[in-house]
Length: 301
Ligand SMILES: [Zn+2]
Image 1 (cartoon, protein in one colour):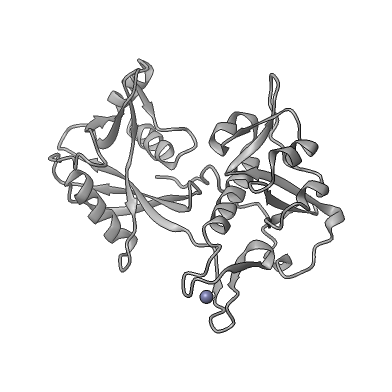
Image 2 (cartoon, rainbow, N blue to C red):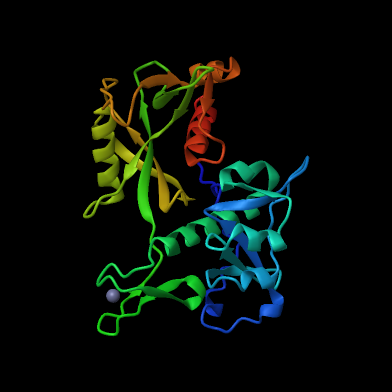
C-alpha cells in the first residue's frame, strides 16, 4: 500500500525548536485562541476560524504555548478557558465555538494540522498541572514544550507525551476468489459506517505484538504478515495512530461484543457497491481508517 501523509500531519510545518529557549519579540507574533478545546468561528454564512487575537486579551492568561514559525512570524496558541466570558467578548464578538473536526470545511489541511497541534498541546498542559512524581505544581518551560516540577527536592521535567495505538486492516486471500477485508461495522440511520480495528500499545509490547494481541481480543483472529502503512497524529486527546495491514489464513472470527458490535468480510467490489448505494460510509474522511480502506478498495478493484 503506498504511503501518504495523513490528515492533521504537516511535514512542511516549521516547529522551530531552536526558538523554544529564545525570548520572543511579541511585536511579531500571532496567537491562535482556543477555549475548552474548541476554536472560535465567526458567525455568518461562511464562518472563518479565528487564527489571531489581540495581545491585550492574550495578556489575561499565562497559558500561551509556542507552535512554530509561519512566514517569518512566530505562531502561538493561547488557552482562554479560564478567562471570563465578559472579558473575552470585549475583544472577540460575533463568534461561536467549534471543535477541530467540525471546522474542517472552513480551513485548509495546513491550518487543520496547526489547530490539531494546538489542541493537543493545550490538552497536555491542562492535564499536567501537577508533578506525577511528587504531586507539587508544575510550571511552563521552553515556551510550552516542557513543564517543570516546582518542588526543589524533586524538580523533574515533564515532556508532552503521546500514546501509540495501532489501527489494522485484516485481509484474507482465498483460492481463486477476490481478496477480502474484515471491517468493523457501526450501525447508522442509513446503514453502516465501517472502520478498522484498533487498540493502544501496552508497556513491554512492540507494535507488531499489539497488532497480534488486539486482533485476537477484538475479533479473535490470528494475524501474520504485519505491514506498516502510515501514521497519523490523533490529538483526541493524545494518540498516535499507526496504520497496518495484516493477513489471516482463516475467515473465522468472533466479535468481543464490548468494543466491537459487528464485523463483516467484504470484497472491494462489494464495498464499492454499498458505498454507491449509500448504505455504507467508509469512516470519516479525516481518519487514517478512511485512507487505508479506500486504498485497499482501489488496489483490489
Ligand atoms: Zn515533582
